[in-house]
Length: 47
Image (cartoon, rainbow, N blue to C red; front, side, top):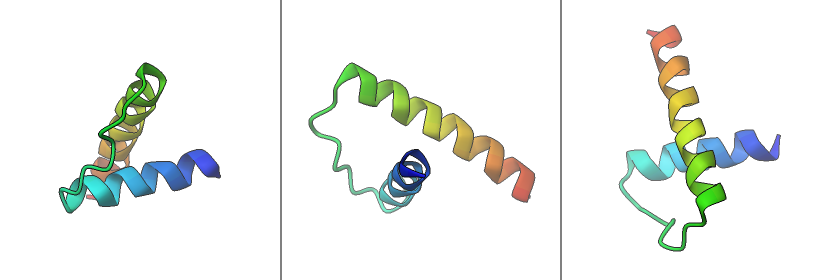
């Protein structure tokens, strides 16, 4: 649930161009990349 919430936050943040990930750890980078890939798949399924 926490992971999903974070993904949605990244999605919304990314859509509106507010980058609140100025301090990014490698682990967070990986998670962001995973969330973006996941979002891409979800968007494709929605369309």
